[in-house]
Length: 264
Image 1 (tube, rainbow, N blue to C red):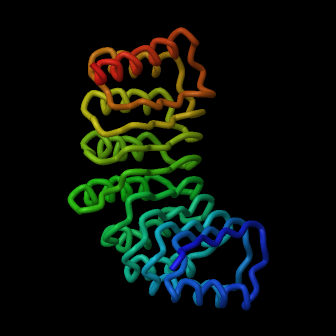
Image 2: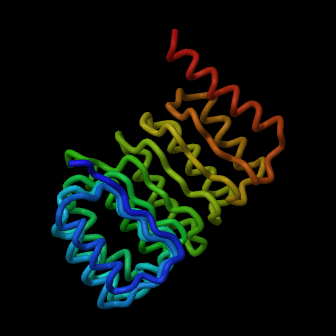
């Protein structure tokens, strides 16, 4: 059987549309379901969720911007996570989860047996939610399928306390490969704790901190760490920060030097 994907953007999903999607899910014919900026009634969202819970083929579920739009839908999605066994990538970018919504999802996120990629970017998360995600990283590291890709972009309400919890978890993570915390208020304090993390983490390949309010002061702290300790990072995204080109060039040189050493 040929498995396929369903990708729908900016559509008003009718009951017939949802019924057809649900049938394909129940027949285990779908590996990727992407709904972005679509409208769907609460009743049809629940029908879709029931089919997702039973689906054994779904690998990626993307419900971005306007789909998971209230606490009732968040609770329904939480039940899906507790029942589904095949999902690997869950993308909820632009959903108004907040701290309470993320807390509602946490039991399902923690016990899901195969989930490794989680996108909660622009989800109105605060410090409590970020601390929960730090716990998720730590606990999933003990499982067969740990978190390898984490996106928390554009969560503007996170303070230094939240970022400290997250970066402390990342520092000890052995399997996290890609971390996106761009378009946040990380600032030079955040750059400082990232510098400490860089001294110990050996798993990260990509770190995206674009447009996070970092200046030369924070960049120099990270540069010092890169000079002093080897890193596995090959893609370090620092665009749109107030950092002089000379410092950015030195950071690039450190990264290139580390990876040249790996190839010797």
